[in-house]
Amino acid sequence: MKNIELSRIFAQIAEILKIKEENPFKIRAYEKVALILENLPVDIETIYRQGGLNNIPGVGESIAQKIEEYLTTGKISYYEELKASVPAGVIELLDIPEVGPKTAKLLYEQLNIDSLEKLEEVVRQQRVRNLPGMGEKSENNILRGIELYKRQKERFLLGRALPLAEEIIGSLSKLKEVDKINYAGSLRRKKETIGDIDILVTSQKPERIMQTFVSLPQVREVLAEGPTKSSVLTREDIHVDVRVVEPRSFGAALQYFTGSKAHNIKLRELAVRRGLKINEYGVFETKTGERIAGEEEEEVYRILDLSFIPPELREDRGEIEAAQQNRLPQLVESSQIKGDLHLHTKWSDGAHTIRQMAEEAKKKGYDYLAITDHSQSLKFAGGLTEERLKEQIEEVKKLDQELEGITLLAGIEVDIKSDGSLDFSDEILSRLDIVIAAIHSGFKQESKVLTERIVKAMQNKFVHIIAHPTGRLLGYREPYQLDMERIIEVAADTRTILELNAQPERLDLSDVYCRRAKEQGVQLSIGTDAHSREGLAVMELGVATARRGWLEEKDVVNTLPLAKLIERLKNK
Ligand SMILES: [Zn+2]
Ligand SMILES: [Zn+2]
Image 1 (cartoon, rainbow, N blue to C red):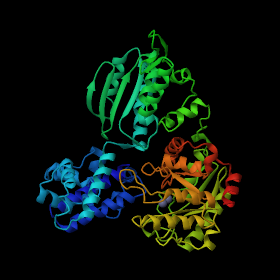
Image 2: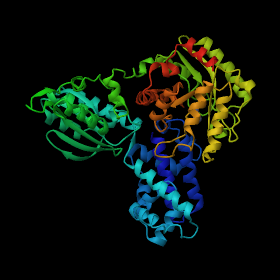
Image 3: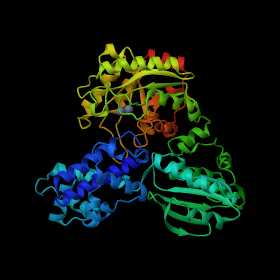
Image 4: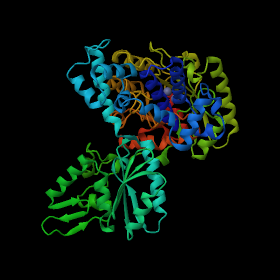
């Protein structure tokens, strides 16, 4: 996680230096290190602890010092000073996709733009297109950039918010004064990005909970401290609320604060028709005001004659109707996952050996693991040549013999080149147990061209899975302009599996497309795309997204026992 944070800081340093028209070599050095950190497969903190910062290409003494400063203090003073030397609003402009330092400088100098609001205004007045070097197209791009930026600004990745919430709950649970505790909100619904974290507690001694909460080490600033509700900002700028509720209201409050709003509105309508009232305190008879439920969340649903709706489904996407008819899906669970089908090792850009990855997978209780390094055209990622791949297949076979309790599958993440051809011949692909294909370049091609690249790959009988199909990077890159209906249709026709990539910034396919794929009879594979042992842990996020996409055990191929999985792959 810190890799990306640091990469963004260095990229921003480079951009500010550009605004200030400083030495191009210095600027280039920061840009280079930003790119290296972004693609570094190993956690920067691990490297720092092992004293290896100076071994990272592009990291000299001065940059190493800044990395160390950030890892030990959470700040880089040079960066803070630099930021202070330019109007704050101009720096914010740099966070908008499509606004680089040149544009920011131009906007500031010519139109005195030093805030997002002012920029929005002049874009809407179509005044940007007349600036030197700009035009209608660049103006539209900026407008799209502003929209993307606004949507993502206040949101954090599930992969970042979930561990934080679990840490806080872990600390508070140690207090003997805590009875029940849970997080609610979009986090409990496991949305891919989260606004803030809401935690609910029951306790006889609320003061003690509040004191402990506001003095946790994760807290940077206390926004409000009250007898039953407190709010803080964490070091990562995530807003966390803790609320103490009465035991007899805990279930109702949990239901209420979990949302979504649309789901709750529909529930309240159902209740009204039955002469009931539901709120965060309980379920009440409208006429008499008598409380009839509220302690347990299940009761709220039972009273409305609904089966219990898992939080991940509460989006008003048909789950209430399904609960009325007792036909809710039996959602896939982490414990049903029998292996990981997408990961990288030292053979390409991963941090660990095949053996290390296999041992870690064994610890997770997996039965099988597919080794899927990059193919030759991804040179920056250490992609395997034909020769190296052949060697790796031998190595995988050998290790598979040696290792007890886990089966290794020889695979590849073969690149789909810009003309739609694959990076290896069918002859090579036919030697592998599993082939996943993916796009890693040419994202800006026209929709038709991009779609046909993937379609062509799916029509190859040796390609089993399409990895991270839409290419989105949350808060960073929009999905490719693909015709997903066509892709799902061809996947169904060719029996190609679509991946749900579990990387926190990908979660690709999204919940909505997962469900669409399932409806069309397409199966999914949840893969971590791990580049290190630790990376295997994000499977949990993939399963959460699968559940939001209504997926059941039968929809996910890596819940299959080994023999069945091999059969499924063979009869694509
Ligand atoms: Zn990939
Ligand atoms: Zn990959």
